[in-house]
Length: 238
Image 1 (tube, rainbow, N blue to C red):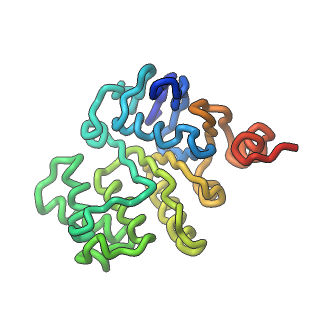
Image 2 (cartoon, rainbow, N blue to C red):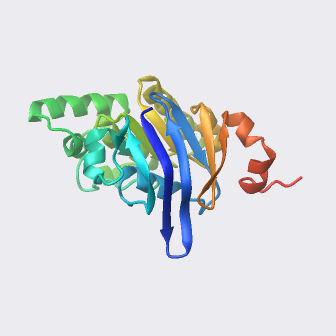
């Protein structure tokens, strides 16, 4: 397994945002995560990425316990994350933003880093914008830059936090095609998304969270059509 969550728990005062969550992600797997607002999805990513420390439970990467490791150590070990709202270094160029990602997690020579970043920009469709200030990019290209910065760290597992949000239907299709290519290249993916049709085009397994609890897991379309998920996630009560 590339990632193992073992009874991961986190509370803020009386509010339990992760309640003994356990699931695994296999090497090269694409896993989707859905749930209503406030279900604990983004908190889960913060626990995996190291921005938050759990109250109990463990996070293991390729069999090694990383529960107390820093975000920097997790990035170096192969965990990368995009954020729902892109936050590039707006005054830096697109290339410089990706270079920061490349240098953050791995020790590379300047020549190696430049070559690596050029390949990432080409892969994500941003090469033509390499010298443009990141703050001047439209939303789709900001999303591409989020992916590029994450890919520049050479991740083994990529955490995508609602990366399709705010895009048009056509832009969403472009992004889905890119994510499918990333998945096919061998990077494991865990994807939180409210745009379910985008998610179902990529993932092979789905987990559902509600009030910090894992309430369903399995084949994506079977999970989404189950009565429990329709009632809790979609609000459809027969």
